[in-house]
Length: 428
Image (cartoon, rainbow, N blue to C red; front, side, top):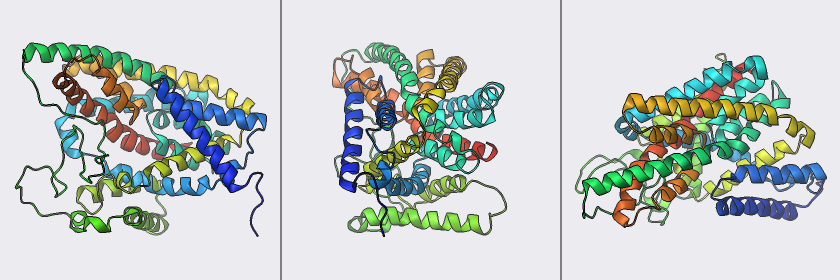
């Protein structure tokens, strides 16, 4: 016998999609100054609080099942996206981001324990610099120990952009002007190559199937950097014909790794009290680096958007379990966490810029971007180049800002935050 829900599947799923669409549209119209997760969360909180939306809506819409799939594959996907070559060419910036993340752990994770209590304080730093996957991990793993706190990481996720976007926008505007003056001084009357740059290591959105690394430069068909005529042995994933690489292939190979990872934790690693997400991230990084798994497989699987909606479904389902009075009760701790986090990241960016020898605005954009991530930083990069008059000038600004902001997504949001969350939830 099936479970009786308040609403039927079609109605639940349609209303969920409408709320997600409205949230994305409003955020895009406002240039993410009010972030999409905040709009989305407020709409669901209001709907659940007033009784307009039934609390079993996400179960009826089957988005919990989709979110469970996303939860199991996104960590491995994130591990494959770690780009060692980019980290080597941006050593100072990468180290600054890592130091800023560790400072958050010290000041927020440990420093705010006397004020917030260990549970909220330990959940905060990884969630502040993490994306949906990190917040889902924090929410899921705290359920067994302290279920009353499971909504807190999602509430942090809602407010990230409200604090980071204005600061990064200001910093990039100033940095963009400085870069423009620098380009014009060094290239009087010269035309530079027009280069479209992305902030993330994502596949070509034109559908050509050509991977693109940070900086917008296509990779060779071996999956490694190389010029025309470069003869290198193809990795395992490169030997599989493209016609066989469909949605089932990309999701299936990730699930093989997931099954192996879970099997290890139920046998060899069972007594170590080690969070499976840590080894999943390491598996993704290692297998992606040696070419067993394609880089960023979910971007190529035609399922990434649906999986992200699944994560948002998990967020809404968690919020449905809390009355609006309880949600409001979390507001003071959230504001305190973000006030301290913003101050720490700005100070780290300013001090790090002075030590590393680049402009303070660049350092602030670098560290505050760790609280934001892709795709918002991609939009802000385009906005930073809007003041340029020629395509050459725009290309130069994007080529300087894009890889720097890409570090925050690839290294911090997709890796370091998952490690921090996975370690600290053990002690909540």
